[in-house]
Image (cartoon, rainbow, N blue to C red; front, side, top):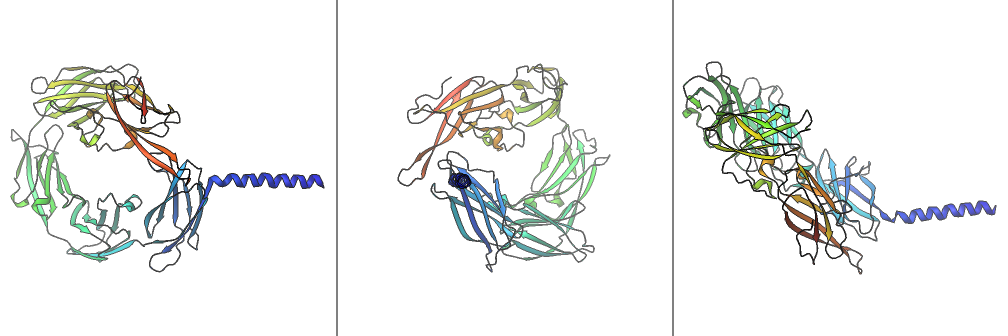
Amino acid sequence: MHITRLIFLLFFLIAGTGICETSNIASVHGTFVDAENGHPIPDVLVRVAPEKTAHVYPDREFEHATATGEDGTFSLTIPNEPGTYYAFSLLVIHPQYQSKRLRHEMIPVRNRYDLGKIALKRTLSLQGSVSGAGNLAGLVVNLKMHNVSADFFRAAAPIEHAAKTDTEGKFQFTDLYPIAYTLTISRDGVIIAYVASIDPQKQDQISVRLPTMETLHGKVVDTQERPIAEAQIYVTRRPETPQAHGAHLAATQTDETGNFRIQVLETEPQFLSIEARKRGYFSRVYENVDIGKMPSIIRLEKGVTLEGHVILPQGLPTDAQYAVKVFRADANMEPSLNPLALQKPLLSRYFPATESTFTIEGLFAEKYALYIVGDGISGTNIDVDASANPEGIHVVADRPTTTLRGQVRWADTDEPVPDAVVSRSWYPWELHPYDMSMTLDRFEVVTDTHGNFEFSDLTDARYQLHIRAVHVIRNADTGRYQRRRIHKQVEVPVASTTYRIYLGKRDGTPFAK
């Protein structure tokens, strides 16, 4: 009997110890209600991301998730280790309500957070009708949200919506947000109506009368007046404001005689542009087009063709590719930590690594700087004069890429700095002609627990590094942690070296090899 009691006593002691250990776990509770009537909202998706104290960026992975019950309440647990987490963010999503993001700071001694009632506003609706044509059924009505990046709900809200008209020309949208949209109506891929801005918060009804369609016709020829067949014709309606959206109104191509004919939505000249293009020729773009005054003859100039031969590094995979990127001869090729400030290539052409011969078409008879790049291939430059040397270019690009490694340490304690963000500069040859280049994982890494970082597939050249870290100090009186962001920028002369970079007050050197 005593043995049985002892076993039960040991069990409860172990269980009690386990309960104490759960102090590193916090629970989050709350209730979602309708902002208009106060009724609870079931099936709200609640996702939580704890934010780490020493991380530069908030946690972007909302790994902890649950859904509200019939009474609108939710409850979930998140990690709450002292010194590791300092806040948590809630991402709230429901198909009939506007998404919301909430953020709360965490207190080391607290393991329960009651958020109380959280009101959500319903999404908006828009009803409309189309008139001005005999057959109104099956028209495609599209809404595209304006670009207002500061509005958080865009992260969880659908950017575009589409609907079809019924036999009476009526359509309806639901689940919209209080932001302006651009509306287009199309039939058979041709836009036949355009409304620059509609705000469903200010109007829930809209009537659209189809405007007049105009006929654009012409002929595309070369500089010798010979017709160009299969030239592409694009008609574009430009946006009225930076936040709004333009639209490709229609497209067609020339026939065997170089002629084309296309129906175009009536548009103010200041917003209308027309482009004619064909591979091997220079595109021609007409801005601020008045269709009635548009030239009937469009002349395209044939470009110069460059042909070359390249020697690549040994051992590349059989499915590898290399790119020939073309820059103006006077382009600034200096690296930058801001990719948007870099010169972008005029064009890029990709070729299999198994083919050593490349061809670049459609260049002016001018001087250019060509760069050969690719996975495992260091950026290699050659200057060419397209007017004097259109073929027979020989490029030796047999240098493989290298790896830049380093370690970030605190200068005061010589301890490694984990979770520091290290950004590297870019060279223009790493860009594409229309590349916005803001994909973070392409030029940023985070140091590991030992403060180490690594960038691979680089050309062995100099790079600028921007290091961002968080220095954390615990306040003995309040128990809270004070976070101080530390930035440092250094330049390393070559990539094929391991560097040690120090952060802190006594940091007197940029780096040590």
